[in-house]
Image (tube, rainbow, N blue to C red; front, side, top):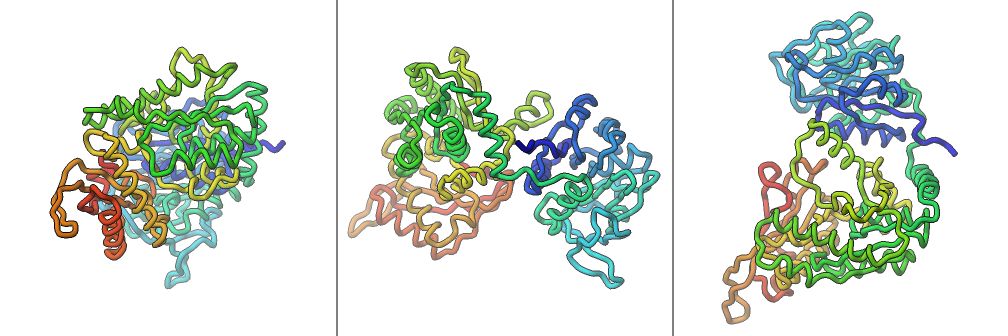
Length: 524
């Protein structure tokens, strides 16, 4: 069987917000890669056996006293190296060039002149300049710049603000780019990364959905044997793809537990059962625990407390169901590669924790089950591609993100059954109309928030005080920043009319026009 990990790229992370994007672009080129901290030990670098190395950008200045350095071993392995932004600067400085702070900080769109017909940029251009030179539309984000080239290097790109915006030592396969080829704003970025990993590093394109599925199934069958595996199925994309993959690999050895906590979207529990139990033949135990969750949440208004109650109770209910089962040896989880990167960063003290993850964080100690995480090498977009390849419905695989605590953190303040029911119905109308008007796939996340306040309304001849809901829709690439979606007024008016007319108990609909930052995407 083909080893889909044999052609591999090592990405050393200097703390750029774009590092995971580099990984995704390399994977999209059909090449396996891993992201590790910039100070990876020499023996680990050698053992990784990369066909090429990429040095990421980062927030530090190469001229600073404690500037992070690439391990010198990177430059003596005799494999190609691509330095991006900070990665280019530290490569230049470490190999004998000079870097200094620039009076002109370049941030945002720039046009780069390609020079010298390097292997990396040859025949890659967006426009042609007056002298016939190739011009590239790129994204810059830097203050320092390379002032003098190391021995053996020549310039391959320039801008007015950075005469050395691209450098190369063709004989050693060392390249540096001051701009970011991994971001979508660099229009030819995908071609540049493809050129590096395929033409310069000599990697094939083995990293494809069907190959990943075949490899995963072989590994799962070997590791699990005839053992039974337990999976907490939430209906989210990660656990759904784990369920489909495990079912394909081990069939009836998989047992799923689906905890219906009463905080799901309209009809979601029935949809999960229909997809997995009825259509795919997966063994799914549905636990109706709505009242138990609502009782535990009674009187609680603090968002973090609500999260903890929901998370702990989920583990409790799941644990009780697991105790009833015989001969289960493994617990499967939908851990994906960004979770692995973040937890590694947290352990090393190199990452900032923004907020705790919503999913179940590890095993209750007394369960004594081995952990099975078949998606831990995959980015979210790869998980989705696998889901489609495994036959899951498109609407399930490409559904907008949904928080682990569900509607519990979309009902502001105390959670009550009445509030959850009103919110479920309002949310269903909003999503239905977004799909009908072809705006669902144009937005990254859309939902309704329930506000625990009443406002006056007029129905027929009478006045009444009823609840208020807020519509929220955002556009984002990475969910780190987001802008509010500028939906047509006609669509918003139609959604508002439907919600107020069809749901007794709601008298007013608002639209949230806050961007992230300063607001967050979710309200709690």
